[in-house]
Image (cartoon, rainbow, N blue to C red; front, side, top):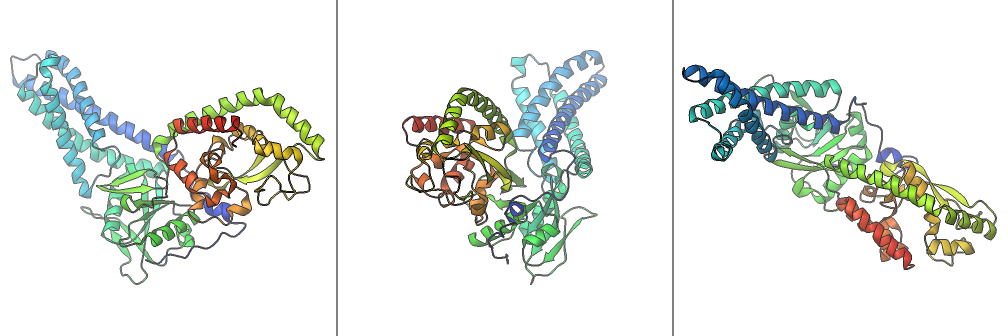
Amino acid sequence: MTVAAPDLFASNLYVETVAPPRAARRTVSRQFFRAAMAFAEIAADFTACVAGTIAAYACTALAIISSSVPGALRSAAPLGAAFGLIVVVLFYRDGAYRKSRGLLQIRETERAVRVPAQALFLLLSIRSLLGLGVSWLQSLVALFAVSMLMILEKQFFSWIARRLHKWQNCSVRTVIYGASELGRRAISNLLQTPRIGLDPVAVIDEPASTGSHILEMGYRGRRSIPVVHRRLTASLLKAHQCEMLLLAASGLSANELAAAAYVAHQAGADVAWLRDLRPSDEPSGETIDLDGTVFVTSRECPGRWLYLIFKRIADILISSLLIVLLAPLLALIAILVRLDSPGPAFFVQERVGRNGELFGMFKLRSMFIGAPRYARSPSTSSDPRITRIGRVLRRLSLDELPQLFNVLMGTMSLVGPRPEMPFIVEHYGARQRTRLQVKPGITGLWQLSADRGFPIHQNIEYDLYYIRNRTFAMDAAILVHTLIFALCGGI
């Protein structure tokens, strides 16, 4: 495999290469659509269980003259509901609502037979405890009816999901890197499993290889994906409007994987690695299970939305409270800054935020008005650019207090990687740009470390650790440590 060699960002391109606009506008978000489809499939599975159980009871009641059909149906409804709940739980544990369907959808049919049998066995095991009068004949008929209904339901649901994905434009345009056996299996799984939401549009392979298309492994009417025999470049990915690059090439070295990921980031696309080959310094994102082959993407896990909601609520509440409580202190400091040296007390400096977006960061002025607005930050308190009151403000980090307004506005968070100036981000490498995946913060692990006296991008380990492990509890712990350090004069 040949990958374009990484180049430094051009000074006016770094925002585009970090987060260019997507090729197509979606009617609804992919995460919401996937959640809605999973809920709909759960409801369909539950309904199939209830309907199959009721049908089985009705059939056996008609076959046995002494049985009362209305009585049988009355006992069938709660039994079907219990049966449906157990089936849904077992399906969920088996990964049926997040994994691919497998070759020729055989695994999907296997689940539709195996899981109802397991659920029925569990139900019969506890029937005496529940006081259920269930005969073996009714159980076997119910198992057959539910399995057949589920097989038909899964086929119909797949057909509906594929068309809804296309109608709502929720599928992510995916380029497969590598025309190997793994790449072909990945293409077939993605085409047959619309719930994953990845739409393979092209395969990029060695220029020396042969073949212009890869056929889906299916029954008949097989779809094909074109193979592009060119070097992997950002312009090639952009030409295919790529939103996800799936690395399915065999025998790639660590450097080749990093170079491929770099090209994808330049094109504004997410990356999916084989789980065992994912670089250790890459944040762990959403997983994609393709019939037992697991890929890890650079896309955030869907379950992280709950953490982000609570974090945003906490940011709003805490920043609002601190702004009110610290308003007298801010006013006093502003007066002292004006008295100490000519010029405004506050200033706004352009910084790089999440996904490379620029925003204005508020600060209390700690340097003379003639100092360059965009230059390396002072490394010592004796720097001639710093004013007398500025030395005190910087030692106690009081010059950062106006960033509470940034937190309230949503351009920053209380906890996160510190935002850098544009001229520094221009020269970020692929590993350093990882810190731009999350919203910047007022405080973070780097600020609490002994390395805070050195450039942030030279100590990227702190930010990478935070991005990989961040939770609401970790944010609270960092805020507590920040408060302790501030009271001890350590920051």
